[in-house]
Length: 200
Image 1 (cartoon, rainbow, N blue to C red):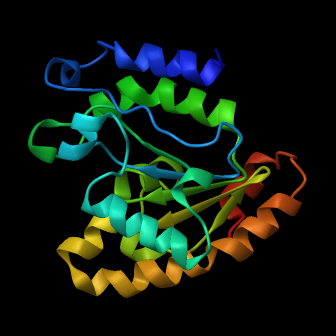
Image 2 (cartoon, helix red, strand yellow; image 1 turned 90 degrees about the horizontal axis):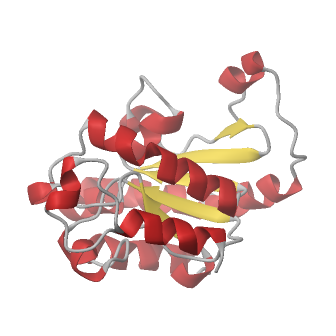
């Protein structure tokens, strides 16, 4: 059994926050254990909670269309969420819930070690781009160490507000070039000052 599979089993029985009381299934994440590209959403929704898989509802269908636009299938990328259980009524995750799941997410990223992390929505964005808004920085990559972080609107935003669709589609088309650059990077961690300034 891989370390990632062991982590999934730990998440499946987690009782670290109140969301454990209402879930049908935890939703750890899925994809290749050596994926170079990781997509990070916010929280499971109704369909995810039922199936135990991320992005299987309408937003997931749109994500698969977006991946197809850059000649990728969902089986080729890793997909997860900031929190692993569905909040009641699909409300926003609370700071306490995000913190309860933080160690799981940290461990996933450590084990997969992707070259590029695409944040989908403001909660995953806030992990790497604090104190800013997604409307201001979507589509603007940042390098920290040997990894690129790339903020995008959540696919669900385009379903609720069609004006976001073109921005999401355009941001998606930048990913292949960024991923090529990420794969050429040397895995060296820059000094702390450089981390804050290292925007493309």
